[in-house]
Image (cartoon, rainbow, N blue to C red; front, top):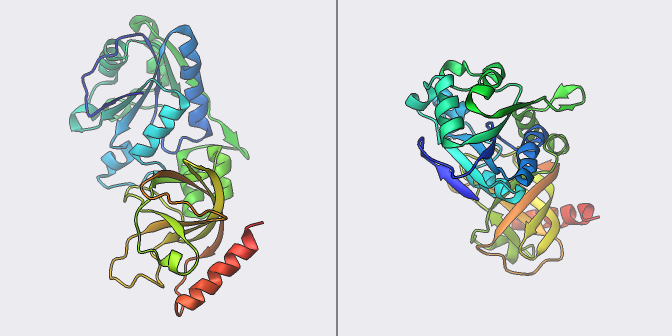
Amino acid sequence: MRIISGKSRFQLNAPSAVAIGKFDGLHRGHRALLEHILAAKKDGLTAAVFTFDPSPASFFSGTNVKGLMTKEEKRRCFRQMGADVLVEFPLSAQTAAMPPETFIEEILRDSLHASLVVAGSDLSFGDQGRGDCALLCAWARRCGYQAEIIDKVYDNGFAISSTRVRDAVTGGRMEEAARLLGAPYAVMGSVAHGRRIGRRLGFPTVNLLPPEEKLLPPFGVYLSEVECRLGTFRGLTNIGVRPTVETGEHPSVSVETYLYDFGSDLYDSFITVRLQSFLRPEKRFADLEALKGQLARDIAENRG
């Protein structure tokens, strides 16, 4: 997959099917949209995903809004889905002020050579968000593309959105988040070297240090599964600051997973931790023996 990042001027060398969106979380609604450009590959079109960097939420608020997916997680998922090109369009004062008609002509027509443009019904683009689905469709014949507007996907009578997924994740409702996403909420990254306290307690773990921009559920223990180079394994994941063993003023947040019946070394390997359900809040124990006892109970009660 070709990644075009940080460039407002670029060129594709073949006609494309373009999906436009923020794509935070890649929920079921996003996937319905992306299926259209992936299907267009059989007609010889390049499947191109067009999104923004930083996210519109972060840019327009002037703050670092945590995302359901990091940039690296998005890249990996788009690649796995079969996208040919990912455009991370730089969002700045200048590009945000681009007239929507200019965006259609210069970006969709001249840079992406779009033959098909697919967007959600809530699309907005260009200066002050004046560009919408009506404008996209009105300019289709003039600029030589076909426009497809994808209706919202509904769950329990309500439209699926990134906001609904965020609410489920921040509330620790992992089953709901999985239903909206079409897959369990995931944290991805390379296994970090830790202090090996879990190993000394008899419960070796694999640890991720999520970046600051990653939205995490409430601190606590979760049923999980981990996909790694050796396969997929069930386990228990603690998200938090490990208050029993970390005594510093500003402890780092970790995603620490004990894998059932697993004894291999995964240091520096890329893994995906999928959070399935919330078990209990993170807590400080009186000592390491008390922590060890709780870990043993958690494993005995939940390994199934």
